[in-house]
Image 1 (cartoon, helix red, strand yellow):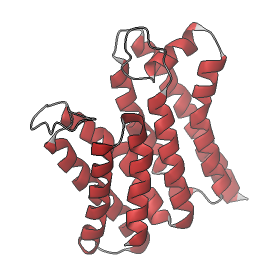
Image 2 (cartoon, helix red, strand yellow):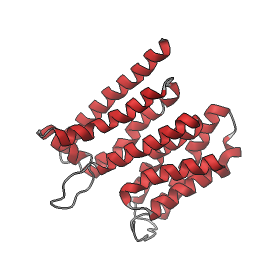
Image 3 (cartoon, helix red, strand yellow):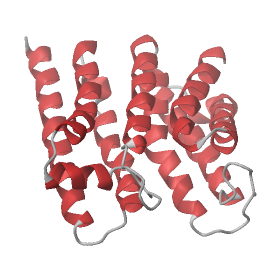
Image 4 (cartoon, one colour):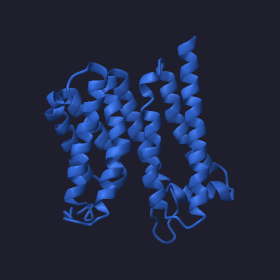
Amino acid sequence: MLTAQIDIMITALFFIGLAQLAWISVMTLRRNIASDTLCAALPPMISIWVLLWPLYEHPIWLWAGIMLLGLPVLLGFGINTPFWQHLRFAWSGDLYEGESPQMLPLLSLIASLAIAAAFFQRSPEFGLGIGLAVCLAFPAADLLDRGRYLQLGFPLHPKQTLIGHIGLVISTALICGWAIHLYHGIEWQRLFIATLLAGIAASAARAFIPTHFILPLATLAMGVTLWLL
């Protein structure tokens, strides 16, 4: 009974946090904060919930949280009021002139966390690690790319930098190593080669996959790499 109450409480707190995040995003957009900045802030905020995944007892509540993430998408396209229109713009990233907001960054994040949650059900240490990497390592790499130092000139992503990719590989390796250590107590140094390979897989996906498919396919690549190793 107590575990069910904890599951409900975590999901309720996530819903409240998501509602607050939506409100803050709309208010800051109305004060001319760029939507790509708001999109970049979304995954790190969601990581707070991912950190609570080990507390879930019943997987259905984890999937309920994933579905809650999809609620802003449904409401954003189903309700034609200024608030929901602004939320669509806030969570759609940079748009070309005349382009309709589609909330693709949020949809990409939802798909990635769903993949991580599927791994979490089979191997919690892997699912937690790749879920946190999605929310923390990838935004950190994007932030490092903004320095425009040592740009790699990939055809699909010419603005990505060597510093950003190194940061992604190392941060992914450390996060995944920490998650495995949390569950099994294995020292991260013994896991570094395996988790480093997961980071390299994520980096390769980031370099050669179209923008809105990067996170889901990189998440799958990280999970499969850890599973095989």
